[in-house]
Length: 280
Image (cartoon, rainbow, N blue to C red):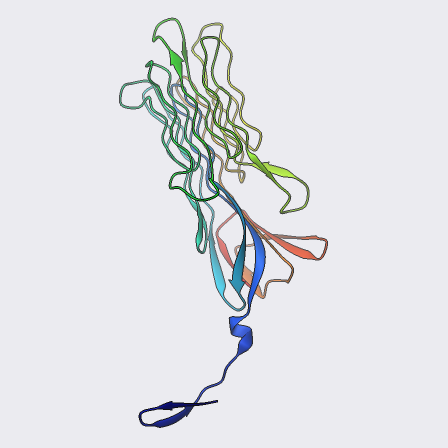
C-alpha cells in the first residue's frame, strides 16, 4: 500500500488482526473495607460486571486489591480496601467501618460504605459507589444506634446488592448482601458487607452479608470475594481481598500471574486472585 508524503512514497503494511475488536465478559471486585474498632462493619469492595471490547494482541494488566486493615482499638476505624483494576476498569475498595470517638464514628466511603461507629448518636454510614460509576458498584453503610450509655450498636457495612442495615436499640446492623454472577459457571455472590457489632449488653450481633461479609464480632471478610470485615469492641475483622474474572470465547494468547483456568461450555474462564496480565 503506497502512502504519499512530501518527499515521495513509503510502503506500509496493514495488519487487520492487530485491530480486531471482540467482546468478553469481565468481573472486577475491589478489596473489602476493614471493620471498625467500635463497632461499624466494613463496606464491601466495588462490584463491576460488564462486557468489554478488547483488541486482539493487546495486553491487559490486572491488579487485585487487598482488604482493608481492621480497627485495632475502640477509637480506630477500619481502613478502606484497595482498588482492583483491569486496564480501563476500576472497582473501588470498600469503606472502613466507624469507631468510637468524635473523629472516627462515621463510616468511610468507598465501593460500598462502611457502617457507622457506635459511641455517638450521629454515627452515620459511609457512601457507596465512590467514585461514581454507572451502573453503581456498591451501596451505603448502615447508621449506628447509640445513646452512649445503655446501648451502643454499630451499623452494617454496605454490600454490592443491598445497603448495610441500620443498627437498632436491640442490636447491631447486618452487612448488606453481595451481588450474584454466573460468569464462572455456578451462581456465586461477591462483595457482601461486614456485620456491625454490639456493646457488651444483651444485644444482638450483626451477620455478614452473603458474598463474603464477616460476621460479628471481628470476623474477617472472605478472601477473594471483596467482603467487608466485621466491627468489634477493640480488634475488628480485616476486609477480604478482591478478584478479577475474565470469560471469553477464545483462549488467551498468553497470561501472567497464574490464573485458574476453567471452561464453561465453549468459553474460557480466567480467574485472577493475584496480580497478572492477559493477552488475547
